[in-house]
Length: 156
Image (tube, rainbow, N blue to C red; front, top):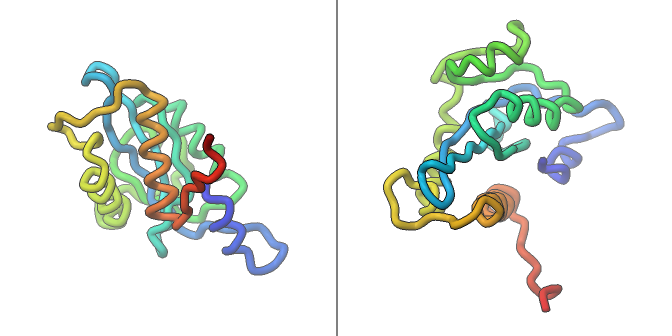
């Protein structure tokens, strides 16, 4: 969750509203292709800034975790692909299904796959365990999208 970004959106002491978000999931693996992991995430439609992300399997409970993170921000419209999970968990009046409005999040998938070789489908680069896999992707998202710099002065 990008708390700093969302707090900066807040102009007064009213509820923060994310007017339009795009949601999607992205497949990857660690150790070998039997150990699949999915990145469930959302980006603000207007600014292309990630709002929240969760790692898990393809099970719909991870979409529930993502929606729980976004619940305080009164989402207006949600743009998704045709995954049944979204239509079963999100109100029909908020949900817009189709590829036309999910181009930004799909472009972010390409950015992640290009910059992080362990996300490519056919590669010899891979994470040996789940914790390292999550750490690499989460660190990249924090640095690339949120401009957060890793402070290594506190290490050893």
